[in-house]
Image 1 (cartoon, rainbow over the protein chains, first blue to last red):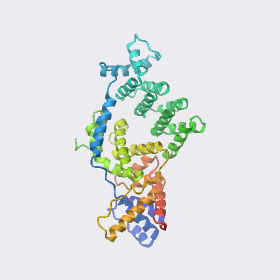
Image 2: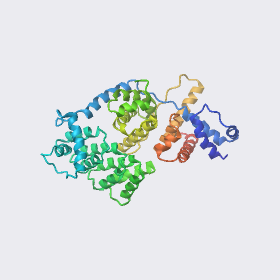
Image 3: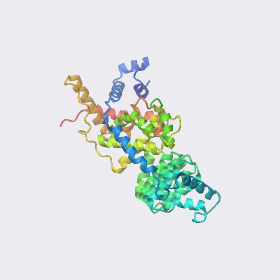
Image 4: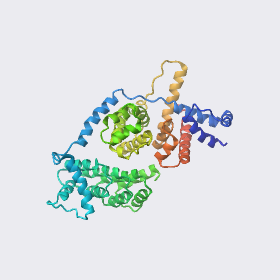
Length: 239
Length: 184
């Protein structure tokens, strides 16, 4: 075996040091200082002492969790009193409205339309809560994806747009999501949202998403920050 | 609940009422994760914050965890993303503060201990000179609970390509580790 082959084979061996090395390797190691050096370095690296975290870290995490989770679960004043039934109505409304081919213009007399309009009205906090509530049901409804993409494109609040991007991670298995995001990216006017969309495309780890992202970079259709970020993520992920 | 395995605990987290399950997962995995992050950032407080950020993302993205999937590789994929965001926020890789990365002191002044501490110190310095991605790869590849198949999935390449990448990173570390020490 050549040294390179031995050294690559040693990668496996260093993970399971209790296993006995094949006689052929041992013989090679006895005569090859280079391979011995690599083995010695692997042993050093394997025994590199692990720093220990503060013993109070778990308790601090527990407190942070208690502090942050109720925030995401808390209902908005707009939804208070309606609770889960309204969330269910929202889901039905989003799916139903699209299935029926309705436009997105609010029609106050239609309860479904009324519920769908929750995505658009109230304060930014209300819209954030609506997104959290609706997506907590984790429905794979593609119409909900469209509604979230609408928020990403049009919501006046950057925070709401970012929240909608985060909610889209739930629908990562939707095969059309990559294309839809690629369409939404160039017209996005908020740099932070562009970066979040780039991250989402990378997270999809789908060849089509990678190609679409690469095309956007090559065609200079992204802002400088988003282009730089996309190039870095594409290189990092070897996409 | 403590008898449940990681995948079962994640099922509870996915179900939306798993804060206790999440804390149990935190207790099981935060130590090695902290070690990994500390070796890359060199800062205790930053690493502790990042560990917590990773587990909050576990909660947020629990739905992307496939039932039966190995938890640890999935956790480290999230950790890599959290780290990438951390570096992006800081705009550039900052040089590590070697004083902040003090290794555990030898238990006594015996020659062997001193030599050991010096070797460890030299190893950390050699790692610090490497590009972040290679450093990260080497630190992950020494973890016995992360197979090369897991790492290949994490890095989106074949196992053989991954091994070649680790080998190259190792060669770089070797040249840095065994290079003659600078005389000041």
